[in-house]
Image 1 (cartoon, rainbow, N blue to C red):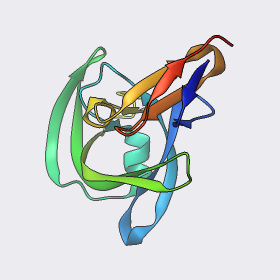
Image 2 (image 1 turned 90 degrees about the vertical axis):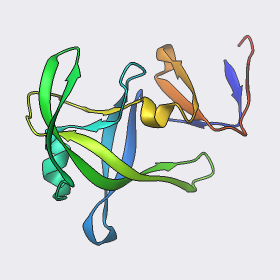
Image 3 (image 1 turned 45 degrees about the horizontal axis):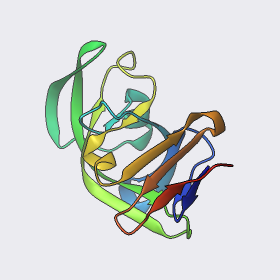
Length: 139
């Protein structure tokens, strides 16, 4: 069992709120992908957010091949174990083809800011900040 000061999620997909126009927020699930270079939104989320892209289409490449994407300026809000929000504002890619990605991906552009612990048997994902520590103890 892992112990320490960190937030746990109920499932291994991570649910974050995305800020959109007029300061409104919507919650969406992300798959934490330690092999993804960057965070990428699915075409479904791009459509639901209704945000105008900053840049013209560009291709992203992954295991499934190349697919067109656009760049969005938005914020991703995560909730700490204390209930306080942590907000990451920046430019994030979004696929335009619904077949390119069925779930948005949280990539290393954000996960490199944390130590990541995945406890598959209990479906827990922990993102530990710089001030957090953990220890492994027998249950």
